[in-house]
Length: 123
Image (cartoon, rainbow, N blue to C red; front, side, top):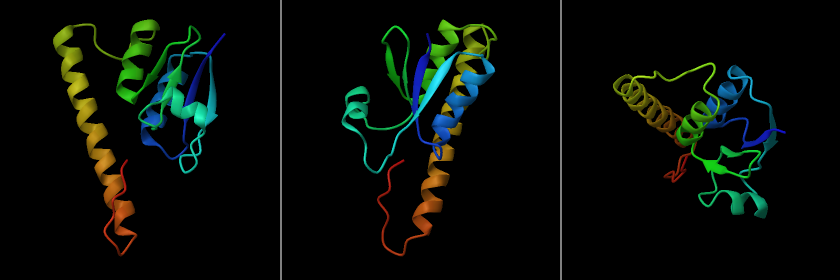
C-alpha cells in the first residue's frame, strides 16, 4: 500500500515533499490538483484548500509541507533528514520555516510584478 500526495507541479511546497518522498524511498502516488478549479473531494481533505496534502495509507491526512515533512520523518526515520538532538532539530526547523516564508514572498512578488493592478495573490 502507499500514500497519496495531492500536489501542483508549480508549488515549491509540493516539490519539497516530493523530494522527501523520493529520498526516503516511500511508496507513493501523485495526484495533481487543478488549483483554479479545486475538486470537492480535495476541499474535504484540505480545509485550507492548498497543496501539498498527504493522505497516508492508514487514512491520516496532513496539509502544510512542514507538518508533512515532520510526519514523514517520524513515521519513516531512515534515512534521517532532521537531526536527532532536540536543539539541533529545532534550529533546523527554524531555518526551514524562514526558507518557506522567503520563497513564498519571492514568488508572490514575481507574480504580482507581472500585473499592472494591485495584486492580492495569496500563496
